[in-house]
Amino acid sequence: MDDILPESQEIAQETPPDDVFVAPSIHELQILSGASYVHYSPIPETISTSGETSTECVLGVDEAGRGPVLGPMVYALLYLPLSAHRSLLSDTYHFDDSKVLTPTFRSSLMQTLCTPSTDLHRNCGWATKVMSAKDISAGMLKPAGTYNLNAQAMDATIELLKGVFAKGVNVKEIYIDTIGSPVTYQKKLERIFPTTQITVAKKADSLYPCVSAASVCAKVTRDAALEVCYQAYKDPLKEVNEEPTVAAQGWGSGYPSDARCSTWLKNNINPVFGWGNECRFSWGTAKDLLEAKGTGTRVDWPVEEDEESMRVTDYFSASSEKNVKDANELINWFGTGVSEEVF
Image (cartoon, rainbow, N blue to C red; front, side, top):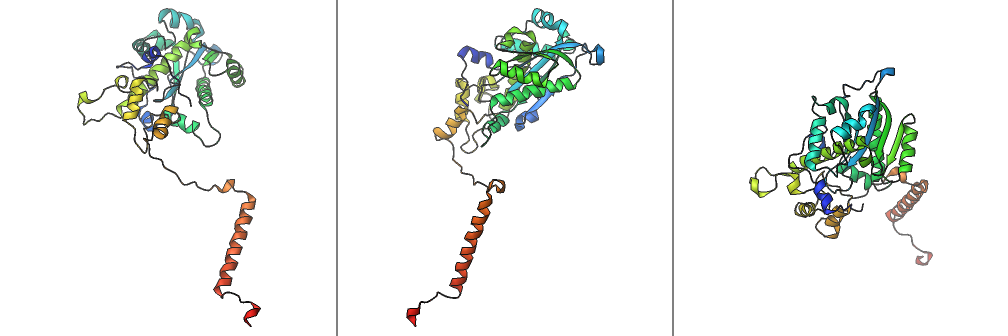
């Protein structure tokens, strides 16, 4: 995949804060093992899921971390009562596209959302799908039938939405920040969720407060996940001052165009394995460092024959070749034949 290169100002916005809030969506063992996973918050107390008296809700979906070479991509959704949509999210808490908000403010909003005594916690439910760098790369590097990033993102969105509906939440309206063509994306979702009003739009995170809130959930979860990945590299035997203590100072935003990220990749490459579960090996930056720059060790793995891919004629040709070989061996066993001229 071609690397997505943000502007320097965007890099600053994408860099995690030094003291990012660690939300319940952070599952350290799964992050460190390179596993993808889903997290759902409890259904808020103001939302009823019982039959005809169920609360009508609005839901937004957005992602964070589509372009970086390091760390997961996170999809998130947030839902709340339709009646509280703009008044609570926009007027009271000033949610906006997470790229516009400062890293510290994003983190504080997420902390408020996760604090039981707040009206955000009482009214809003949310969920995240952490898509590990390992799984993203495995899909994109499949030898046949590549599972591209757009397809993976679509499946993550559908999985999250199905999970909310399965909990009995009465979602009436869904707003989603698009990937690819909004029309194509929206038609596919409408076929899956025919009873819900769905709007897929560009810059939806700036237009609809529920999408803005979802973008904050996604970004803060990614920031904290990036921090978990970085802490795994810290050497407890080194002096505190020898290396940066947090991801923001170490590999920065995780984008290839971030000098901190590219420097870290070069300084921490393993000639055989490259890097760990935090790296997207399908990205051009990783490929170049391993192959084009000559810093990696090339390994040619033996190809195992797949019996299912063999043709029927392969069995006949193999059999005939074996018969000829066996016949020659029998001839040589009894000696070489002589011509009539000998007599």
